[in-house]
Image (tube, rainbow, N blue to C red):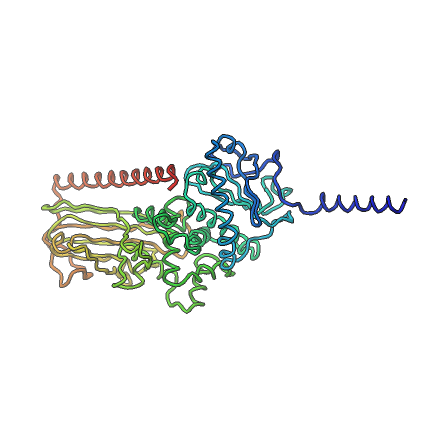
Length: 500
């Protein structure tokens, strides 16, 4: 009897260690606080209570219990159906395909249960989802840790967007889980945020979700992107412009050089541009990142494979798209002048266009003094809309001039792309570029688009009336720019509200 009781006592002790001291089988208790990103929370909550919606072989789906209780039965049913589709897609496509390309996510730090956790909770506009790096450490080290591989999705988006877009949201966030493990946990490297986002933004294309253009993640990003007139994604500020720019860059990079460039970069022991250059070199690509970046800038406005395969998108749905430059319109039938001074940060580009005017157009461009870029692209557009590509060359000096005879007749538009490459990534230091334009009876040059250094024989008048006209024009340009920005913001806000 004593021996039997001793066995019982030993069994109880073993069970105590198994269930109380060993890693847990993951499940959130209904009364447990689940910590979320307060800055993204729709209600500015730092924690929520959750209820389990669905359990599968690969994932546990939870939802914010307060938000869930306020939904109608039809809304709850709609979400349950979407979660079913999402769980199937995660198990049979998202996880296996992304794991085979980008690698694996980390094992949970304090659980025998290796399933992903997806939590639906309402978020502010502009946020589709996120991960929290604090979830990768024990709660004793960080109180806000939920100790799991957790993806937080915007519940309101789940409620409104179509399944294909929702799959893209989940693929994007799952890529971040993989990247954190491959770069930080395995190699103690902090990846450049723009490149981490590039791989995540490309994930829907890698999974084939963008094949149906009308209902694609890429269409949403492309629509936002081509309405811009400036590009800057390395100085990451989590804006729609950042996401759309890096999505189109990743699309271009994979089209031109293969998805392996992005795949190899995640396994590299380097980060950012260095990891991409290493991947390019390993595949025998002659161009480096800086040359590819310039080619991409040109492709966004020229987009013509007959000029060069490097200057276009391969996706048929992107074939006829071109970015919208900021337009500077010159009055016709008048001598006129305009001078602009603007700034750039590293790897920022601004698309600018001059139209209007008449007779000869004299254009001067002054490159930023610290710019490693010795070639600035410009295009001449004729009355049929055909574009010819040229470059300002700055090997010998920092200022170049072109004279375009009979402007606004055969040649109707000048488009140029100031952009900056610097050795440092100090985005607080801005570099200045300048340009000026005059119209009038200037000297005719031998051929259209030839870079020359010939002053106009009849400079624009500096009369009081002309000066006033220029000032009014600059005010109009400033107002146009503000109106365009407001319109884009309104469109973006409306799309977010509609879940498109």
